[in-house]
Structure formats: C-alpha cells, structure tokens
Image (tube, rainbow, N blue to C red; front, side):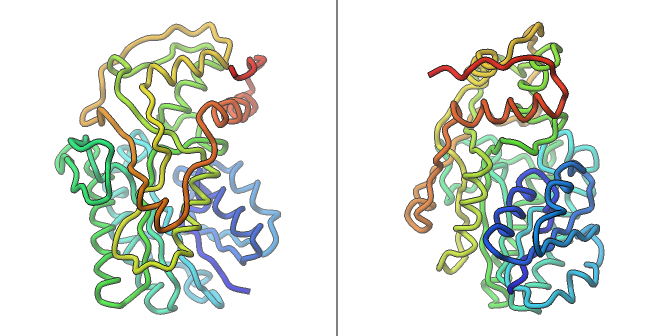
Length: 327
C-alpha cells in the first residue's frame, strides 16, 4: 500500500482530502501543527483505516514518523493559515510556513521520489487588473502590505517548487486555489461564507465590507478535493500552475441575499470599511483545468450553500430551522 502525506491535513480542505484519499484505499499520514485546524475535523478522521495523525510544524525539522514513512509516493502541501485574520495573526510564521516549510517538504519529495503538490492561491494575482484570472497573468500584488506575508509567501513557494522541477529534483504540481467553502470550515476564520452564515445563525450584526459590489467565485469543497487529486495524478510536466475554482462569479451582496434566503435571522446588515488590498474582483479562468485535467466544478453555489449552512447550524448550536433553498 502506498503512503500519502497531507501537510495541513487537519484543516478545512486538508481534512476532506485525507478522507477522500483514505476512501480510495491509500495509507494517509496527516501532519498538522493544529494552529488553525478544528479538533473536530481531526476526530472525524481518527477512525479511518490506515490513517495516522502526526503533530508537527513544517517550519521545523519534519518528524521521523514522516521522514521514515514506508513507500511514500505523494506529498500534498496544504499547510498554511488561509484566511486574512488567521495568517495576519502571526505573519512571520505565515511566511516561514510557505518558504521554509515548503522547502522541507520538497526536500522530502526529492529524497523519496514522491510527487509533490503545492496548494497555492488565487491571492498570487493580488487585486487583479486582468479578469478573469488566467495562469499566465503575473498579478498585481502589494509586496509590503498586511496581506504580503501570505501573498508573497505563496509566490515564493511557487518559485521554489518550480525550481525543484526545472532542476529535476522533484516531480511537482501547483494548484492555485480560489475561494472554497463547505463543512469543516472554522466558524470564526473570517472568510466571507463562514462570516455571513454564522452571523446570521447567531443573530449578530451581519458585516459587509465596503459596498458589497466586490466579487468572488465559490468552489464547493468536494469539487476542490476532486480537482487537487486530478492534478496530482495528471500526466503533465508540472511546470505550469493550474487554477482550481468555480468560474461562476457573484457579488458579496448576491451572496448575502442567498444566505438570508436560507437562514432566518434577527441580525442587522452593517457595512464596514474595505480591508487594505482586498481584491475587487476574483474569478478563475479554468480552461487549463478543463483541458489538461478534464475537471470542472459540479456543485453550484445554490446547491452547496444549504449544505454548508446546515453544517454550521449544528456546529454553532443554532436553534433555527433553515429555510429550504430557493429553486
């Protein structure tokens, strides 16, 4: 049986990825420092067959349980706080996770011959001047702003990953992940989907940053995991990144309307200043994913949002009855 390492495997996307890989018959090692992961995510994985959790931080030397794992064939690097409040809480650690941590995992891939996949981000495009965002676009990123620890950290991680490939030191894949949502998200992670749903469920003020006309695309987590696995297993040279996301574009106000159709609430909608360097528009061009992976999303926002709201209602103990999704 082959062994697959998922760094950051107790996090939102990582926990779904661990389950999918285990269900496919692989031995899975989840490496996580539990900095931002929810303990409940890990509990959902502990009973999986051939699953091992190792507590550790990829910024530090990798634990022996990882470096000495038998028949390691795949390494997914999902390790990094991914929402602005989380990655800005310790910007030094965010940068080191992306650079030093990625280096540690790439060296492990080089030594073992395992294929390596970096989960990069749409944030490498910054506040884009090109729309929708194609992989060849070099971005409009502030290298000195409060988001730079994450944005520039991921750009540096990509550079290192591609250098390992060019020097024939490792087989690599790079996924540029766009906004993803679904069960296992942290209720207080500061992302727009979790913010709006949880504020509505608990009757708090519902915060809209700016005037709500900024746009995002929302990919349901099962589609994201399917895309990551397809990329890892694809027969490509690995020297080009691949956007993974849902190309359907919504304003934040449109998302709010959909949430309010689902969740009865006493909360009031309030507007707050737009955060510094917050992107005005975000939508992936997924032509490359369609062409080279045969991948495209299957779950629409109108389908995924009710499932996400139902999960959050249980997580926060909200005593409300969700409305049926509008047809």
